[in-house]
Image (cartoon, rainbow, N blue to C red; front, side):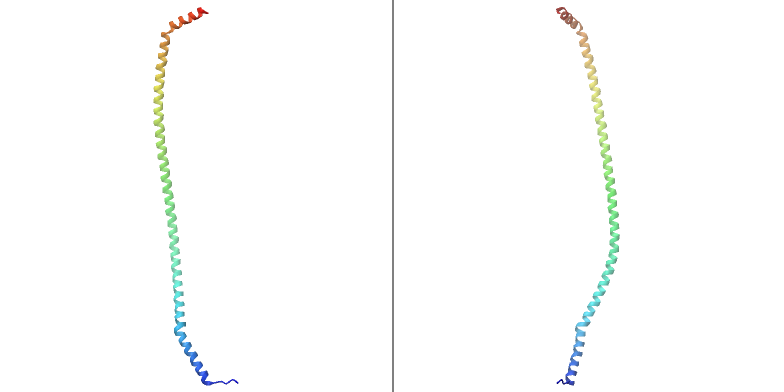
Length: 140
């Protein structure tokens, strides 16, 4: 039946203890050290990430301030350009109006002169016109 051999039990116990010590030194200790260093690295990275997150919020605030400043500057430049354009167009309009008024005055002066010349011409031809009219009436 079953025989219990004390020598076999002792040898098995010695091999078991030897394997336990050897695996502890070669496998478990390095594995535990690696896991501890990994946990420490993760904790350090989390701390750095939270500090970077805080500084990134500051950077976002600064970036938004810069964007707002740029928008304000762009609006000012745009308004200045619009005002300058309005000023130039008003100057051009007033210049064109003065040119048109001068041209209108010259036209009116020529018109008045031509009117006077026409009137003088008609006055000088009145006797001829009377004579022509009277001859026409005589023929009727």
